[in-house]
Length: 392
Ligand code: PLP
Image (cartoon, rainbow, N blue to C red; front, top):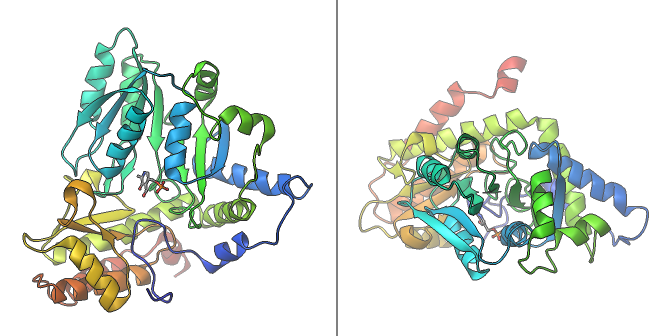
């Protein structure tokens, strides 16, 4: 892979040079007085980015999967019932993780390309008058299919049923790129990793924990040690923290906040819309079932019958030194994915669209070279960011 080319995978994402440098600090004694300000800056930055006004932010040296495990093991007990949906690779893997921990998962299976089934969840929650369901799991952005689900609607379903279950949200490919409001949406556990919207190397599991989830922690009997929130809260760093990554995280949050979260979300939306215009110009369709579900961080594109999406991704890497996302699980081979989150600009997106066109043309997909690029150019030219319009 050429280090000169951006990647178009939905994480790990491209890293701004300034963030890379912020991670590259000399060895610091994490028990010295220099560490607490760095740690606090990272945590208070995350609080703002995830829209959290109460509760705790916990940072583990792990990836997003560790965040899933921490969320459930700190708040649930063996045999507890949880409600979850399966509509893509990541929602499916979270269910698997819960089952392997001995939870009783009520799974609502939906075709890949659909979102979290809010109406079915609402019916199940309303029928659960004994409140046997202890947690509802939502994958905010299903990275395998490019689908964003409505977390606020799941909260509304819980509230309408007067149901006390915890709301756990996987925000791995949404947080810091698309709107996320932990406290306002009543999210009890918000999970992400460092390598997506935060534009950092992989290595931190980031978990927002609400006061209600902190209260549940006391009675939770699933076994945990490395991921025990209690040690984290009592000691801050019960084991050697990833100091460089935490420094990078504080820096990344400041960068996002300086851009303004609304501008960050608007930028992701504009860039994604340009990609979607390109997809339409190619005569192809996103895997997401309806436009309301379109993700602003990743687009999974359905290929014509007979074209192997994974071969396409390998070809783009080999011939053009550019990484796109392969199809996963049920949609392996049927789609390829363009990741457009994190450090991404119109110009970068246009390069990705142009490369995808070349790779598809090489593989016999009947796309006219330049068609997707032109559609995206047209959109970007006519929909400049608000800041650019204001300065003109
Ligand atoms: N959840 C979602 C939505 C993801 O996209 C990913 C990874 O891509 C994960 C969870 C797992 O995160 P990690 O690979 O950081 O463990």
